[in-house]
Image 1 (cartoon, rainbow, N blue to C red):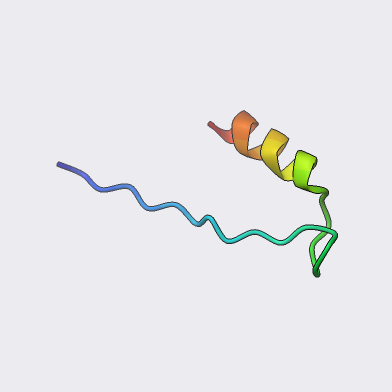
Image 2 (cartoon, rainbow, N blue to C red):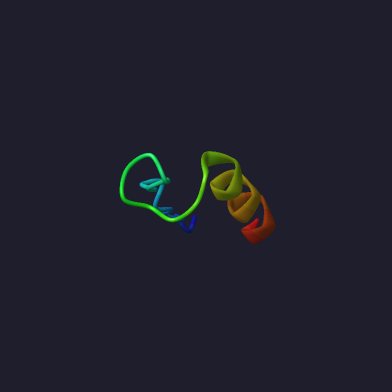
Length: 32
């Protein structure tokens, strides 16, 4: 069985990120 690893660590505009929480979700959904 192959293991897949994902990075669930994200930053939003509420810390030092660029995107809103909603944008982070949209991008994650689009990436699959």
